Length: 544
Image (cartoon, rainbow, N blue to C red; front, side, top):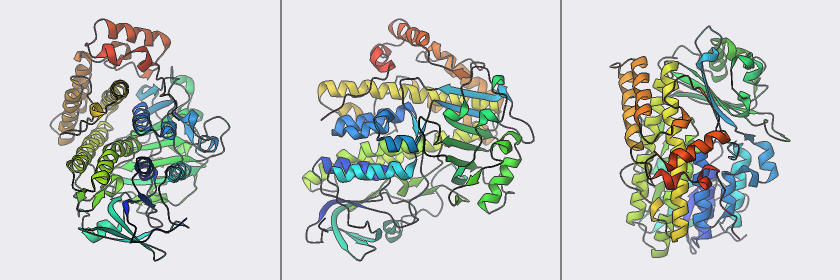
């Protein structure tokens, strides 16, 4: 492969080769943009999200259809992935939440499990293999990589574009740089753009690794005590306790698995758990010893890689957009890896940024309003995610509150998936994509059901009052359940307003009742959103 020189500039240099950067590079190259894809410096690539939800899949389906890259749909429909990716990653048949109290066994009455409908294909992404697969797709569609993949060493930006210096001494010219390389970005360093204090509400101490020998939760308890529950290890498990959570994603739970590892991500309120040791392994062991059921699960577990750890995990930089550059994804903001938000937000930002870059390249105008809108949308998306995570942290203080909050979050996620699918189908029918380009003053880039943003805002406001000490957890939980009971767009079949309905299975009978509700007493917009096609998650057809 010929190495490009400054005399033959690229349109865009993408710094970072994780999933989001590689997908962005593939889309740009497919659209005729000349793209250079460059690795981040060794050790700079960060621990990233490894779980999805149905909404994540719908974003990837939208990317695949809009930009005519069918391989992208496989990130939402795992049966279409190459077998080596499927076998090293895990399946996700449920989202399980188990609340713990120090010194006590986990109480089955403090558990919630949402089982993913069988036609979905959510999964646990083993990122070393998944990111490499995305990089291969980018190359296949024309993104240029330098032989032997030297990492970025420095970036200089100016009115005429950018010079990207690589570790092998080669220099590459680009009209515009998208930096998704994360912590330690040479561009952020040159710009002096990193915020001294993160511009986020959330503060977390995070410890993350992959482990051998994690005992499945259903083997640590009497599974029969968890009436209606499926095996917890077949999905993403979040162990909750006041001020924190421990999220597990098993990679060896699918058919013909080859990966015995489990993703382990611990997130703690730094103030509440200030007494834990500074060394990550010691801190982790001390924490799990406080919860007897967790101690059994990790009795024989061994870290397979060095811990990724930070006393304060959150990080922000800004502004996101300037002359010749865009700070993308983890370079702009880093927050907790929870509720599948990391992978989802990455895909959402690719969808927002890719068309703006294509337009800028075709016009050779890198100050377009579309790029400014993408930067503003990224700010709104980061703020929205931060509110969700801050609310989740508050909800861990009391199971009653988590029981309510988790239903608000799931309602938003499910209805967003259905709304996006419906909007995408209309876009495909019309041959236009304006309906999924609502990059305005909030994080909704397509039209959600009327009343849903308001309910979510009200719920997060109620949680903020608990955090501030002006409301109790039990009173807040009651108000959240009341919001769910009164909202006309909450399908009764979900029983989200019933605190005792803690195990969710979307059976055929429930599916039929959902269709009946949507055609009779539901708000009018649900008659088009909850069609048989939408409820059965028919994947987008392959394109050639």
